[in-house]
Image (cartoon, rainbow, N blue to C red; front, side):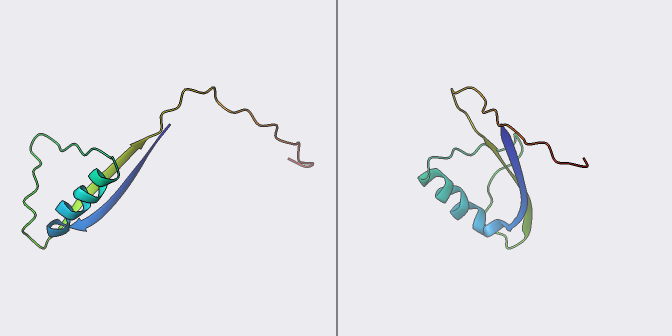
Length: 69
């Protein structure tokens, strides 16, 4: 399973955000032409992709029938 969060952030705050993610054990990868200038107060479009890894089988839940549907 995976989710993607898209957001904007001021470029001069990106370094602090990447550092906070690193402290939490989350690695950050940049595109080949994407580097942190982190000096301009302009906004950048960002995307955070989170993959959830587990070694357990998928959960199955019984869904009760709803009358009329």
